[in-house]
Image (cartoon, rainbow over the protein chains, first blue to last red):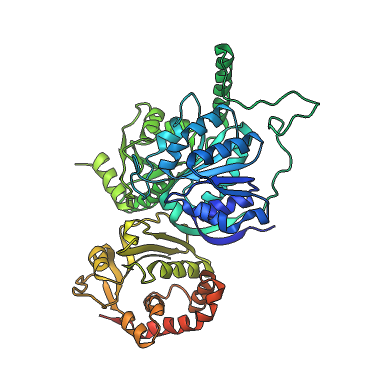
Length: 356
Length: 180
């Protein structure tokens, strides 16, 4: 089967890719700027083709708990929302992480705090990468920078989620959600008919009960479980780091940016080089696990780094940890729903590193 | 080849759909495209704009400060985007409702009275196709046949009977655009 070329919004690409990835269920609640995901799925009505369930829940809380239930049955299930809605889902997310269940959560980020704005932002980095909900847990966090990656990362998310029995988040933003680009869609995958051996699908006489829970009252048992999670996260840190380098070979200054900001910075690299400044771009694709080692290695070759984010400065903390004092690291970013322009990034880089 | 375009006007003038047809046409010609709309409060009454990039190579930033071409369809958009045209670039405007006209001397300015022309043609809805025709005359980056293919892709099938009318509008736009 060949891939199919379409021109789509990022949100539509996620929805279509979910059907094609053989997802079993989507549970969501509308919010700008990601409502097209739910709208597309409702219109496509995949129940009639693949048998995928699409349901608009009564609230974000209901949606994430439907995902919890579906995941406990071993199904490929997902939800999507934007920042305020993702905050509402945090309780469910930490329970899912605590119960070691696979699922996909999409956050098409808008500006905050509170209801904030409906325009794009990257101010949910801390929430996605450092926890969000309570307890020692991590999501695997993927940051798409194109409509193509919005589609590709759906299948990848399910693959990683089931490999590690861990929730995966696609951390996108309003710009990639709303923009249209060319996208090559993968052929339709069949929905899995086999439940994983841990799934609660009814107990046959041949095995013991499968129990899905995040509760353990014996501290010794709970600590052993926490240690197991740490081992899992360390394995993910070892094996799943993904990033893209853009003209880093001879770079004297390095931009670090993900998602929409990484696209903006690609152009900044070109503009800076036209002015004779050797700039490169490191784009983290996984935000957890973060490419600490790669950025640390680059710190030995460049004079300074600029973390470019649509936030007050969040990922910059992980860049600082990677660099560990070797070279100066600064943050630049616009907030409140304003997307940085390529020229602004170059001007800021010059003002930080090349003044005088 | 990379062409970076901003189209700006009132909501309801077909700004976003004109950009969409451009993007589809670019796909039909095997080019890379991006279409980045304004989706904020300005869309809910007021100005709407869309950034379209058509390129023979990988597209970097879908969000831009400066453009090769600005297609300007109302006064607010002219005020906002006249200074965003790169030196040596192109500004195309419809004079309908304008009280202040473009003043820059380092760009090429074209005028297309598409509002008036669409009224004459008795089809105000083809307004944006007249403008697109004018753009293609100035910047022939996409073949007309690929624009027609793009139209077919972007319009639901129930509207395909309107394609000849849109083709006429495109051709009329090519005729009436003039350098200022």
